[in-house]
Amino acid sequence: MTRRGLLPIFAALTALPGSAMAQAGRIDVADSGDTAWMLAASALVLLMAIPGLALLHSGSVRARNALSVLIQSGAIVAVVTLLWAVVGYTLAFGDLSGGWIGGGNAWMLIDLGNVRSGTQLPESVFVLFQIAVAALPPVLMAGAWAERARFGWVVAFCALWTLVVQAPIAHWIWGGGWLSRTVGTLDWAGGLAMFTSAGVSALVVAVMMGRRIGFPRETGRAHNPVMALAGTAFLWAGAFGLCGGWALSANDDAAAAVIAAHLAIAAAVLTWLGIERLATGRVSAAASGKGVLAGIAVIAPAAGYVSPGAAILFGIVGAAVSYQARRFVRRALEIDDAMDVFAVAGLSGMAGALLLAPFLSEDLGGVGYYPGNTMISQLIAQVSGLGVVVVWSVAATAIVALMASLAFPMRVSEDAERAGLDRSNHGHGEDVS
Image (cartoon, rainbow, N blue to C red; front, top):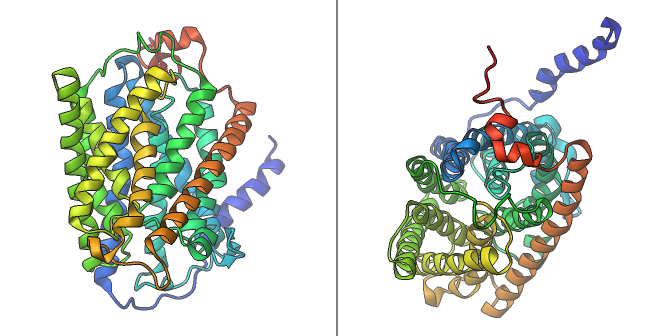
């Protein structure tokens, strides 16, 4: 490219800092404690993706593919972060525009308000939390295509997915869109908006990409269970930020949501370990990781709405449902979802969203229904929201997966897969001297 051709690109790049920072003058925030909590919650949520899910997935694959999982996770977080700063945030949380998609007022984070409406937070802090939340589902999905996806396709697909699938759903449920405002669907921390959409999308990609060579007999064992358990620990702690952060304030709602998350995860872990012990005569390191993920997903839609006792029940149901679903997907359907993303996270999120309807009742310790609502009407709202999220996730994911494959093939060659993605995709282990 000539120097003259580089001038417009250089001019555009030099304009980015000014446009991105062109915000209204700052004012004092009414509650600095809320701000501090949300900054901490954002960091905790980011830790769920990297290193949490990255270590869990990397430790659970064969050694020759471990590095590829870590590299994919880092690249996914990077591309999602940039896209949400440029356009994703305004699509999801910009000024309301007909209830289907956010307005364009916050493109490149321009024209952010000083204080986010309905909170005592600087909007910049709200943005940071939403960027951290947005990074989690694509990293979770990456477990489904582990050991066979081409790196370029992964980055392209996740970039498209976060804008076409994730941002609209976030707006419909969290950003004042039609599912929450008109239908009345509730989702405290992402049982539908994150875990259901990611789980369904992961299943779609797993079907489109096909099985690993040798599946299900020769997929190998986890090369580093200790690494996987370390990732599990980050997930468990990070769930405090995910569930408590959606209170958007350092108050009793945040504390109640954190308690509910902690109890549900503990119940899910023990349930999964117990079922595995009865079924196989032993307990494995993988059981702890899947139990934690199931517990987080099942309580996410309800953490701020239900009682501690209900949270324990949610955890038990989430683990029991996902354990049986995992076996069904692998053995009966023979779908190669490598990390069981759909069965563990997707179905647990669905179960939690549906259980929310009865346990929202004050008689069962919940916060109660909105005026005019009943258990039946809330269940209809939850089922409607679930149906919309599933249908949109299936259709839009298939489309963006095919779009990404126009630029990059979805999976590596058989030779590359047999050699391992660490070597074939990233050159790890090759003599480059």
